[in-house]
Every structure is written in C-alpha cells, then in structure tokens.
Image (cartoon, rainbow, N blue to C red; front, side, top):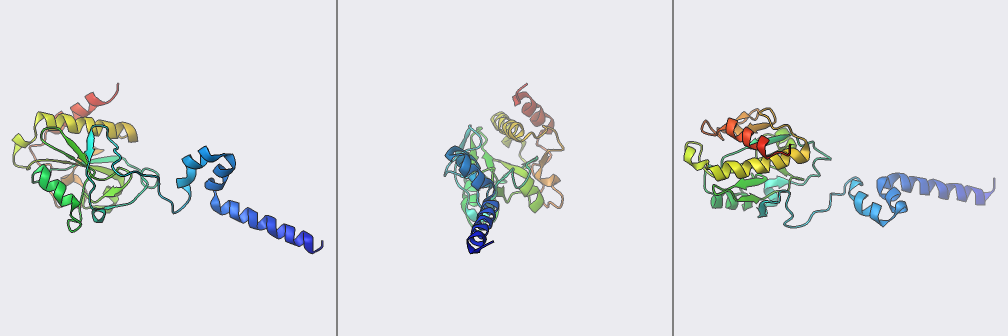
Length: 217
C-alpha cells in the first residue's frame, strides 16, 4: 500500500475516533437537527437545558434559592428520585424564603408550602437541594418544607395539607414513587438526622390519604 492509502486509513481512523467520542450527539447530528435538540445533553459533561423560573409543579411560583444551597444535577438520569422528605420550617414562610436565598444558610428545599396553600418552588427537581442532612438522601429525594412550628398543630391547616398532598401526588406520578410511608418520610426519619420535624402533630394518615386521593385513578 502506498502513502496515499496510509493517509486515507489514518483519516478514516480519526473520523471513527471522533464519532465514537461524540457518541449520541454525533449520531443525532446525522439524523437531523430535531434529534440533536432532544439528545445533546446526553453528551458527557453537558447539563440539560434549563430556563430561569421554570416550574416542575404547575401550581407553584418561583423564587431561586442561592446556588450555594443546592447542587447542579441531571436527575433522574444521574440520580434516581424515589423519596419525598417532609419538613417543617420552624419559622414563617417569608423568613424561610429569605434563608434559602442566603448563601450562608447552606440549606434549601425544592418547595415551601405556606399555611394558606401557596407553594413556592426554590430549587428545580433536576437539582440536589441540601435539605435532609444526608448526601445520599438529598440525591434521591424531593424536599418539601411546610410553614409552621412542630409544637403548634394549628399551623398545619387544611389548605396546607391539601396543597402539599397535591404537590406530593404530582411528584409521585412523575417519578413513579409509591405513595406510602416507606417512600414519603419525615426529616426526623432520615438516617443520621438530628431534626425532629415534622413532629408528632403532623397527621401522616391524613396526608397519605390525601396524596392517594390526588393521584389519578
């Protein structure tokens, strides 16, 4: 084989390596632009597309938590989501929103449910919120805070239970999470947790029942 043949072989080898490295992206590019739009984020080291203020739950409003209080991720592709963790803020809705916006707080949750039933999303479900005190639980769960204090049962209003149950049912539906106490747990039940919320006044039977009722039959 002459020099021309060697160069041709070398060229083909470089093309093969290039296409192998690009993986799904290159294959999608050959198929067309629409395929690229759907598959580009599968390339290693590239995050999914995201938009400021985008919501995962249609009934929520958006306020961004400080980036210091959560970690960028591509859930459920990089971490399976199979738990919901229930929290109580031990403070007002407004002070909790301010805390999650504060980079020195070092904690956040995906959602805060106000006593009147309003829901604020502060971290995308794609991402890992620092809410449970356990790295592995944070990676696999969605955290829901509820406005109130653990020793004040009157804080857990009908509107709060009902809005939170609809939110939890939506999360369960989207990730295939069973609506039971194994998969929906309190902060105090996270292994290694040093918190007591949601406390003895949280009505788990009512909450799980409401979630079940909110799920499509």
